[in-house]
Image (tube, rainbow, N blue to C red):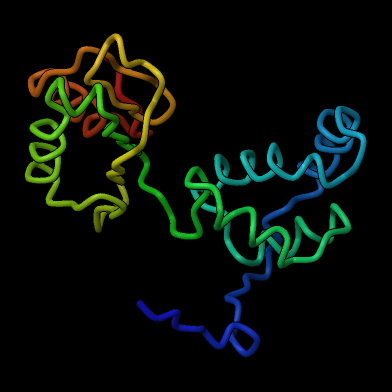
Length: 183
């Protein structure tokens, strides 16, 4: 195995005129998030969660803006974003489907559900549909082994899943304008 280095020092970051970190976000963070932490660095994760939720990704420009707000090096923000699976630099779909692939879910048939979703949406894990509606993830333990197989549809955990149940959730997400699924 070989490590392939990227020329990141010369890489151009796409920028838009409008900042990702708005004045309203900064004001809310100063009032609600920063006071909970001994240092500004401590507020990095909750701020990244808010940006991820707002934009369905953490764009590189936003990482620079967050670093400036928290008086951090942009590399420290990038390290955090790229270390944790919950953050992504790629735009996620309106409905993020995360199929648990822990040992309990594996024993209870997660593979059949994952393969069904892959075929139905024509997506591989960590891909987003061309229309931006769905992102499929294969996730590690979601902490509900006693109700396996399980999956997240956006932030909602669905337990004791069947292929029919997943189809109902996908149908609901396709019909909604926000991509949230309810069953």
